[in-house]
Every structure is written in structure tokens, then in C-alpha cells.
Length: 294
Image (tube, rainbow, N blue to C red; front, side, top):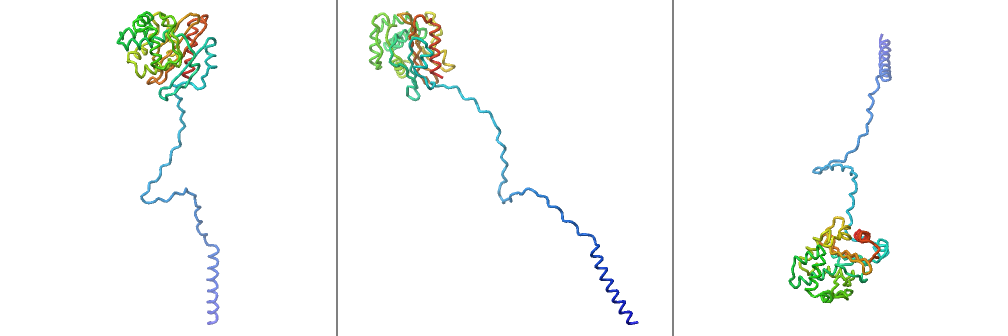
């Protein structure tokens, strides 16, 4: 009886072990680990720091159009101006008052018959001697020849030219050989620039007022907006023009100041064949000024 009990107990133990083995082999599998999902790494936040805001992508904007040139064009020389004039002769000087320098100089010392440009000297003489301001201004703005003749006679005649040439250091300016023909005074582009420098620095304001108020038609009906006014392209200007024919050639001159604060002194003198009519000659002078001003 005791022997059977021992066998029974051994069996029970072996059965228990087998049960454990069977249970371990057929039991449910362990739950699968979850798949890790990659997420963006964020920088650690430092206490007290401000998280930077992402910069927006710069937008592409159109480049603004460049402003029109306001100064003399580069590369202006005698050859380029001669192509515009085609025949005859042209002289040109541009002086930049802001930079205190001459930016264009083509035949600056070549002498021409002045035509009405000598009225600048007549005006200075009359005003210096307390002459009639209204008449001086009309002579300048309308290029009135009758008034010029009266003032020429009243305030010195040829001596006007000689005295101002000496005072301003005008090296190429000469009075007319015929004392009564003030328009035959000889001038150069360089000297006309010096006259304007004097006017801007020393002359009574009445002179510049008259030059700014130049009328489109002169007292003789001639259209005097050729040259600087037609080529100024919106820039402010003050002018004194000159025209004459035909002893034996045609003279067409434009002179004055151009730009804000009268920055540029511009002088273009031309002598053209008498066969060239005034309209054609005037257009050529305008083309020259356009080239100078860019």
C-alpha cells in the first residue's frame, strides 16, 4: 500500500511537470512591441528663451525703373556733335556748378558772331547804371532788338563789350567792327559760360527772372524755344538765344542754365550755311543739346 502511494506521488509530480512544460509551450505569445514612429526632433527649450519665428521666404519684387539721367551724357565729343550738325560748325560747353567742373568742351575757343547773346552784356551795363529794369527784362525775355539798340547806344556801345570782357576775363570776346551793329560782337562758348557764372553770382535778380520768363516767340516772331527748352525734357531752365543771317552764314545759338538750382550751364554755338533754313538749323541745335543732356 505504501509502495503504491509512492509511485502515485511520483506520477503526480511528473504530471505536474509535464503540465507546466505543455502550458509554457502552448501559451499565448507576449504582446508585440509597438512600432516606433519617427517624429521631428525639437530643440530643447531653454527657460526664458524665445522660440524663433521661422523667416518667411523673400518675395521677388520687380526692380524699379531707373530714374532718367539728369546730367551730361558720357562720350560726347566733336565727332558725335558734328554728325548731328552735318554741315557747318558747332561748339559746346557744359559746366557742372555742383561739381565745379567742365563736363563737356568741344571747340570752346572758336569765335562766332554773337547775334542776341550780347544782350546779356547790354543788360548788365544798363542795370549797373540804374537803367530801366522793365525794358531790360523785355529785351532779354522777348529778345527785343529795338530795345537792345536803344540800350546799346545809351550805355556805352562797343565799350560795353570791351569793359565786361576785361572785368570777366573773356579772352575771345571782341566788340563789333561796326559800332552800330551790336549783333556782330564776337564771342566763344567758353566766354559765354563765364558770363553766366558772373550772372549767377553777381547780377541783379532781374536778369535771371527775365531769362526764366523767355517767351516762345521773340519780338520778331522767331520761335526761340529751340535748343535748351526743346531738349530740357521737363528740367527747369533759363535761356538767352541768338539767331542771325546771312553775313554770309546762319548763326543759331542756345545758352542758359538747366536743372534744379541752375546746376548746369549749357552753351551751344553754331554757324551753318545760309542754305540751311531756320527750322532745320534749329532742329540740329536741339539734337546737339539732347546729346549733351543725355
